[in-house]
Structures are given as C-alpha cells and as structure tokens.
Amino acid sequence: MYQLKFDENLCKTCPTGDCLVKCQYMDSNKNEAIEEMVKISKGEDSFVLQNCITCYGCEEYCKRGNHPFYLVTERRQEKGILTAPRAITKQWINIGEPRGKFKLGDIKKKVLSFGFMPELLQLVKGRLFDDVMPSYVFGQEFFCNVVYIHFANTSIIKERLPMVIDNFRKLGVEEVVCMHDECYGAFASLAPAYGMEVPFKPIHYFEYLYNRLKELSNEIRPLNTKVAYQRPCSSRLSSDKHHFVADIMQLIGVDLVERKYQNENALCCGDVLGMAFGYEIKNDVQKRNIDDMVEHEAEYCVFNCSACQNALAIKVAKRGIKPIHIIDICRMAIGEK
Image (cartoon, rainbow, N blue to C red; front, side):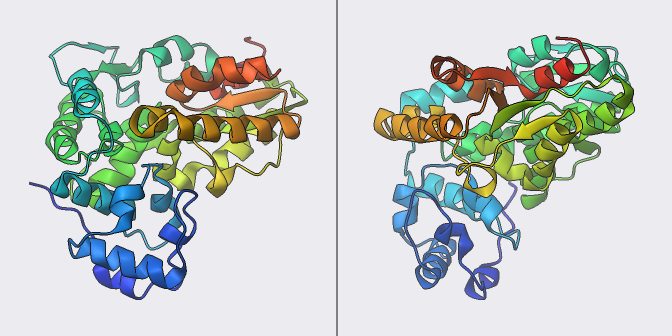
C-alpha cells in the first residue's frame, strides 16, 4: 500500500506554522500549530482532527510541501473520525466506482481529461480546443477520486488512483490536459506525495487556455467588464497555477476585482461543507462570499469548477451578478458567445 511522504522534522523547524495559523476555520498561533501538527504526525489526538472542515487550504499554506491536509485525512481515517454520515460517504464512493463504461475520443498523444464530470462535455467547444479535440477521455476509469479526501478516506484513493494512472498509460498518451483542478492535483500533487509514478505530463487547463488565447490573440476583443473569481477548494492542490486566472483575465480585457475573499484567502462554494458539517456553516460561507462580490461591484462571477457553479450560480444571479464558467468568458472574448 502506498504511504504518505511526510517529514515530521519539517514541522518541528517550521518558521511560521502557517498551515494552521492561516486557517480560516480554526484559531492557532505559531507554537500551537507546530505542536499540533507534530502530535498528528505521531498519531496522537488533536483538536485539528475534530475541527478541520476539509477546505484543503493548509496544503497551499504549507510552503515546505509537507502535505498537512493529506496527513490530517490519513489520521482521521485511522481513528474513524468521520467528516460526513456513513451513508453519504458510501454514496459518493459508489458514484466513482469503475464500472467498465467510459468514453474515448480519437486518442492522440495529447488528450483532454473530463474525469467524471458530465458538465465539462458541454463546455469544451469551439476554437479554444481545436488543436486537441476530439482527443478526450471521460468516465469513472479516468476519475481521479481526490474528492474523497473531503470524506477522510485516502484508502479508496490509494486503491483507485493507480488504476486511473495505468488506464492513461495503456492509452499511450504523453500529455493530459486536466479539465478540473482535482484531476490535475491528483497527478501533480497527491500521486507524488504517495510515491505513485505518473508516466505522462499533466497540464492544468488554465495554462492550456492561457497559451491558446495567446495563439488567438488577434481575435480577442476586450470585454471591459468587472468580475469576481470563485476559487474552488480543489485549486489549493494546484496553487502554482492560480496566477493564470489573473493572466487570462488580463488577456481578455477583464477587470478582476480586488476583494477580501480571493487568492489564499478565498472561500469555497460551501456545498460540501453543508453536506458534511451542516447548513449553518454553508450559509455563512456563501453569504460572506457573495456579499464580498456585490460590495466590489462585480458584474460576473467566474467559475472554475462545475460543482461550484451548480452550488452558487442561482444565488449570485439573485444578487445581480451573472454566473459564467471561465471557458465561456474566454469564448465571449473571441466572439463565440
């Protein structure tokens, strides 16, 4: 079984304790943060194991690459500390179970990976994807399973992710453009953290979009509008690609408003929080987030994750903000929408 690569000494010598100090849902100072993470690494009890709401934030806050959130998830499963009712956890695990049913396009050396998110099949259209479509994969056999860290279940990921990686290997692909943060995070962050070899180059679709827009720069007509970006929890696993949001908005002539809940301080959509920890925290997170967008006069809310868009689209629209996926606003800039 694959084991998490975690170095307790990196915590002991940490100069900041940012993994917990920066957490938006727990209060800790530097010394307490270091003490608690060392305790967790030793398998001891900690309030963190009870209070973590699985926002993934500490994975980004830790600048030493020591994977604090993966460790918390491991310990929770070992101790039987559930983050959601067993029935909900089981339902989600069943949804991602490989069933031998999947869709393959005309497979080339570079493929688009839709994971197991049907919404993406409707989003990926037009000239932005001309150079890679119809080379794509879709289905549980290519579903990264990273979502199960929300449910304190790394064992199912360690079982399934190597199978997913092997399915890509069997296709002989060299580059995989991941159309969802969690898929990219699976191959670029989680797999290496557990010593899984990835025989292809994962590409975050933000980077792909940015490069493709530069190729189509003569067709871009600046949109001259103000937008707020809804950053999903999964983006914490690919924080080195987050800068592409601002880069893309600049390319298409969009003002990305400076607001409180963005970048490292972003709030997630709250959907999983409601399911796992109750509607009170979900409603609080969503209200603060949308109030912040309204206060800064955003005309659009730009989404990355389809699940976030499903959770918040109607709510932002009721506040006078138009919901739109980042792919669609890019298509607007080249005159396709």
